Each structure stands twice: as structure tokens, then as C-alpha cells.
Length: 356
Image (cartoon, rainbow, N blue to C red; front, side, top):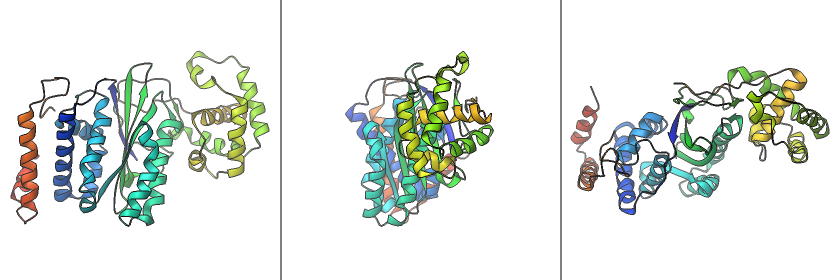
């Protein structure tokens, strides 16, 4: 189940090398403490919470309201855990841009290296479907460009991915927690935080159940029948409200994809969504045909509803205090080292600090 969405203003600039190194070390040490105290499942639960993740980024001194927080924090976490992932049992695959497309390969390599091969196919499928849902089944104007897949040796997983909308200069971050996933394509979220809504084709809304069923049925029809009806749609004058979803269809390209869906004969909407090559335009076209032929209209409901430990990279709310940052890392490392020989007093003290 998706656990939340965070909307963030686009913010430019890179984290300097001296800061990224500290972020990597602190992210690693915080993760070690959480896993030692509460276990790997609790870490996945925390990382899937958009509020906790934002606080985590602020503690690492990244911009408190920046979209860059997502990519840099995930990168720091991936680099920090690389040296302890075997002992800790937590692995991070994927990242930003081209790196995100290597996620299946990285999952497969990590699984083979650490003996997780029995679960690798399920993990790869979960990674792909989470991305497909937020980029294709939910068309909210945010194009995914970042996908981090965090998983354990037991096959538990979490996803942190982000899309960009260059028209409104905002980014939207999507969080998933594998242990909560009951259905990838029916209301896969239980908390979404966002003040910026737009026209959204929401094929994973409960109201879209009928159109999901009909879209799957239509995808098994011969391409000629579908393209013939798409051409009818392209000649209609549609309302301005849904203009985004009726534009930019190429019957020639759709025929190629429809042939693929016809040959694969998907039994349901999730199987349809999982087919390689089925993207936003294919789903949009099938949803329109569902309404045109069967009167099954999709939902256009946007699923959105209504900490500064060391300073921030851009000096907000104040410049990074390097001495304080290094001291935090040293305290955590000392705690971790002592815990290895059975001294859990400091860990218990840290836990007490979180209680009201």
C-alpha cells in the first residue's frame, strides 16, 4: 500500500562533497541504530512515511522544503549502507534518472550475491508495479525520474520515488510499504499529503473499478477494432476539463501496443499494467474507449488531501554547523561500537528521548 505523497517545490543546486560525505555517514549510523533497536521492518516502515523521511532529510542537513532532499538522501543512504548491507540485511537499489532503470538488474545482482534469489522475481515485480502505478495508472502530471527500492534479506520492501511537473515547478514524492500491499491497482494509498491538486486520471481509485475491468477486456480485443474507435474519439470536440487526456494520440503507435496486449491476453488490469510498453497513453486510450463503448467512466479525482538538527545546505534555516554534525556522527558511532560488546544503555537512552 502506498503510505503517502509529499509535494515539494523544485529546488536547484547540489550538495557539496563535504556535506554529502557527512550525510552518508550519518544516514548509515541512524539506520544501524534503528535496525539494532527495532529491526529491519521498522526501518522500512519509517522510510515509507513521508513525514519521517522529510525529518530524516532535515536531520542530514538537506533543504527542508526541497525536492533535492529526496534524491540526495536516497543516494546518501545507498552509499552509506553499501559497506554494512550484508551484516545489516538492508539493501538499496535504484536512484535518479538512468540509475533508476537499472533497479531490476541491481536487485538481481544483490539477490544472487547474498543468497536472496528465491525472492528476487517478486522484488523486481514489486519495483516495476509501484513505478507503473504512480506513472501510468495515476496520471497526475508528475513524470517519475527517481525510484529507490529498499529491501531486506527476508523479502520485505519499501519504495521511495519521485515525479516532476515542470509546468508548476513542483515535485511529488510517492512512498510504498510492501507489507501493506494488498492490491496494486485499487486504492494503494492510505495517506496522501498535498496542497496542490490538478486534473488527474486516477485508474487506481475505487470509483474506477468498472473501467479497470473494461479496459482489461478491451485490451484483449483485436487492434483494428480499438484503433477504429480511437479515430472516432480524435474527431470529437471534448470539454476543456479533460483536454489533457484526449490529446496526443497516434493511432499507428497505439495499434502496435494494442497488438501486444491482444497477444498477451491480460486477465485483469494489474496484468495489463505490467506489460512492457503499456504506458500512460495506452491506459488513457483504453479508459476513453471504456467510456465511449461501455459507459464506464474513470475517476478524475486527485488522490491528494490536505527539523533542523544541523542547519540546511542553502543556509535555511541557518548554515550547516560542521562541528555539531561531526559530533552527532561520532556519538552514534560510539554508541554502535559499544552496542557490539553488549552495552545497550545508550541505545535505551536514545529511545527514551523519543518519548513524550
